[in-house]
Length: 309
Image 1 (cartoon, rainbow, N blue to C red):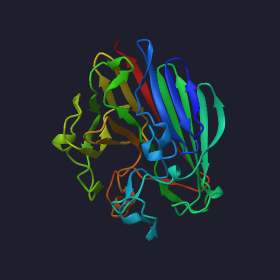
Image 2: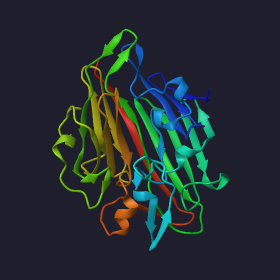
Image 3: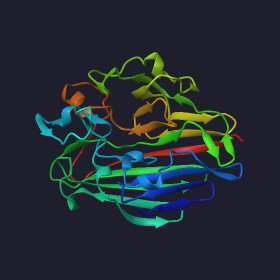
């Protein structure tokens, strides 16, 4: 059994699993007198598997790297392929335990130092420090990546929250099924989740610029050209509205809606899928960030809750 660090301010209750890649085990809101899972809860038997948690860090890149080939400054670095589609996926932070460096009932700081472990699937050393804070109706996450190497490197940041399609307590459903709005004007044309060109029109099945139900089609799309500080919003009618706020560094959003699953994902991320390859090909707007030795890349996002009951 993995130890859970629980944050609780009476409105939000969030569990962190430092040993499992610094992941979030659960995210609950106190609605109409009961605690309700808003983020997908992690079963006790799955606490050691990051991909089954409520959310997990994406560092030092988000989403996929084609063939695991990281292209940078005229060189190609071969990463370990760790996904069935032949890509390197979701960075390296989830491969290792993180350390709790600060904590209180409503605040925790988790840290991962790549130099302290062996076999990290990234050519350069870095330190990641993620801060989780409860502030009233807000779950706030600040993410920082410091270049501890002697070379400049490209990188990205993000998080992978899974949300419940329907909210429920032991006594039954709370409100209606989730409806989604994504405040972005463009998306990438993807082949097996990989783009080959800059973002353009959003395909109809993935168009959530106007709030609507999740629908019946599979979605795994990457969006950009955000229209404001709210990257997207999820509404469970007559129960809750949850706004995903993200700063300018997190200029992309990934939405994953699998069919016949009780959850979906809405991810605040800095870079497009396969940003290393796109950047090497001169494609603009990938969101890839260049981090100098000793420099720290920071980004922040929050889930802001408004009860509708």
